[in-house]
Length: 403
Image (cartoon, rainbow, N blue to C red; front, side, top):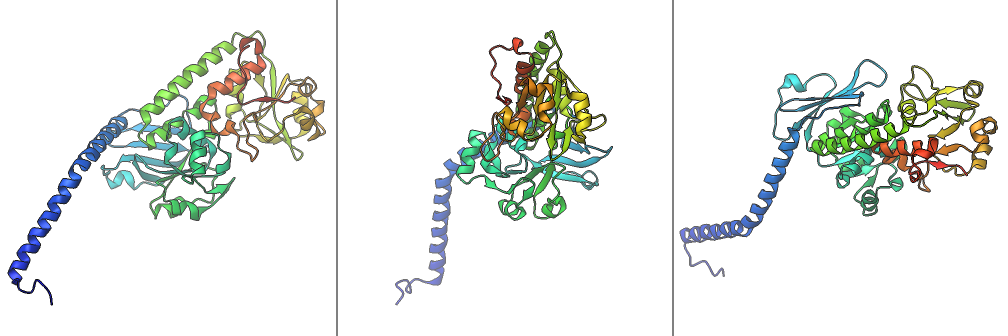
């Protein structure tokens, strides 16, 4: 028998109502202090985000993307690297802001609410940009996760907080979808990522073509795009300005050198020699180190050349640099990999250098991870090698002399 049967239905309703009021009141008292702290933090975060969004981002060196600052949104235009066209336009909008359809619904135009909270990176230089800005904990996935040098990224990978989403150019789409990042960063070589398909499930893809720029400072300036995504634009601008100052000091020092040596950057890949184009960052990098280099005219990437052409133009060059990384450490190992290498004067004089001083056994090369955002260190290394008298106390960071 129910012990409350003697109570009338009207009384039961009054008791239930009073009981619910007590529950609700207690809950309010229990969480009000906690919520006040949370709201205070939230208000601070909102204020910081608003202040950063009002910061005007200006580009000094980058030529492969454009930033237009408007009151309600930032317009980021990614330019096509080879044509007079755009790859995509991104409208970066605070979460509470609505834009008119006439702005949003344009061809190749995509809306991204900022600040984003999570990201998947399909290139090591993208991870390097986040490391410079201290945003590693927002990375949910990356390729080749066993090859990263940044200690925080290593720790996050070890803890399973950054998932491996592919190797090289092969990407695990299913894994990326499972992670549900706000944004995936890719370059224009990434062909198996469909922006439109991922957009239907709320995932944006963004072109991040730092490697297409024509000088080291322009590559480094792409950190400002990462800053815009996370509403850390002012921080990115400050870090870049300091990097630019250090770079220009090294460049000015290099100009005091009494000589201007000739440099070869090329390598035999299965019988084909690849030489940098004059529109890539390589010739400017060498020129800023106060040296000369002959490149392929009209090209923004390395192009194939015959051995005869390379030998004719570079046989007497003073220094030989390789951007192919790998694990080569000795001159004999390098010489044995091609019958032609030993014919060059730079080889005979032992002046061959690889950008693999910081390479992990399984292939992660820090030159491609952090190097893009430390152009001053890359340049300092080159000046140390080419004009050692100018930097007697500097030890190269990225470049290795083959013994």
